Length: 438
Image (cartoon, rainbow, N blue to C red; front, side, top):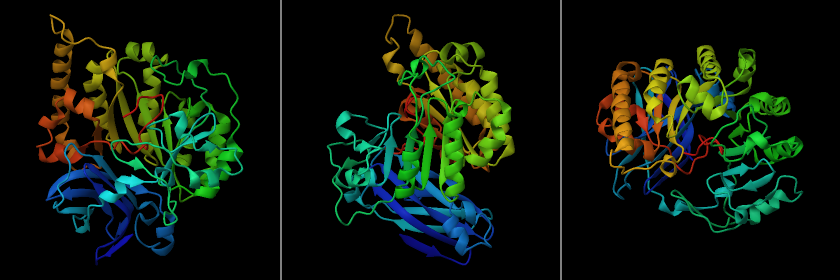
């Protein structure tokens, strides 16, 4: 934990991981004139943008007279294209709304490559089984069941072999402290959609979900900073919504995130605004017939829901477009709409297109579609430079789409380079199992 104070800015970096190609930091920052951005630089080059506005009731109790102190948490995360050199000068920069800055030096800590991941984040499956995260859901990575009376002891003792691009799981030691940044909860799989790419087969799910009391107990025991809730589709699950609202009232300093398809009636918007700090809306196409064939839902309903949430401005909205072979050519249409709204984040995530397409045909059909899409996407992003310049909107594009759409050709631009970033594969905050993984 690093505390930094100046005449203009007060801040605390609760945790920072800088190793190889992974950058991750979270903490809080406040300023008399308000905080505009939190970013990480390496040798004066921007390498990671962050989100600002997480609930921090603990800070507000100490500094109640500072603007935004109740929502002053930040989180910076990125998986870089290249590994950082050991002698790189890495700083976390906090910028106020009047362009005052504070630079906090960050050090490489490669030993954190090995960590007890289950002391920092977890995934709770719809059947109640608990995994260290939602990136790898092997049977040998089941820690236990949420109903187990000794589940905390099982978490403490858990060990298995697991590695991802960011971390290698190790056994927890006596010196390790549980600090849960994130718990991802998959609740009932009841859903209003019939998505062709659904990995959990939600359309045929007819079981009963009743793990709410066990969820309450584990939230009480672990006190995560953020929980994400998903289905199925939570917006049609009254019990799940009631439980989430209850948790929000009980723990007002906890961030609650909703992952949804957003195909909901306008009457639920006030409830969503009051209950959730962040809403991630997954979109699977941007022409009505494409969307309906893929999901069985009405695109206009989803767009209206998203626009109404953003218009209210109470919760942060992330608009996530999942690219598939039949909607890739519509990415520019999605971007035009999303860049008009300027939500907190615009996300492009590949839905494993490569397994569905055939490249290298004599007529180069697919290559031509990709090339034409690439050009239209780049045009939309260039046209949005002025709107993006002073906005807090970040565009998160995964490595597959970055290559497919030629995004690196744009990152040399001062404005676009600042607003376009990559996701960190270790983070599950923007992922929805069954809605396409980034």
